[in-house]
Length: 161
Image (cartoon, rainbow, N blue to C red):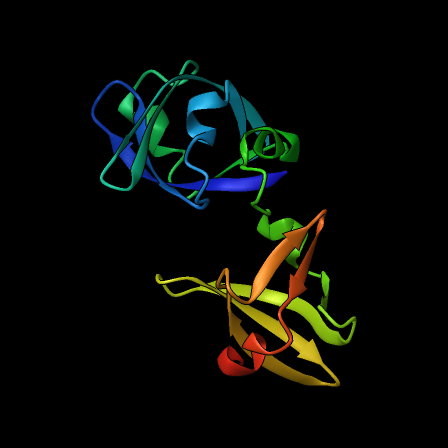
């Protein structure tokens, strides 16, 4: 199960909730019919995306008091839901963590141990020989070949921190 949003608060009096998306694949909200909240499955009646938030109405929740009980819960969906809607050249963060990177000359670059996002782009935390390096994800440095990322051996030296 992958986390797609965090419920922030109730919205209105009819049981709708305001949620913060935890994914950059916002199309997931238009394609899911149900999700797991806590340990229960809730069916989605309606979703609207406005100002960076998802406003979700669940069929099983009809009052503000019921919606209030969902505050701070995480919405989860099966991984295959995101796999179906992601672009061909995209990866899920879940797939990248633990990936071992090689450059175009087959030299070991390291293993992705974490991914952070400061707004401009994703930052890969790559570990090699006990040291951690921060490398921004830019198309000039990384390219997708099948199910792996290949690193340009010259350009990574320019961006590695």
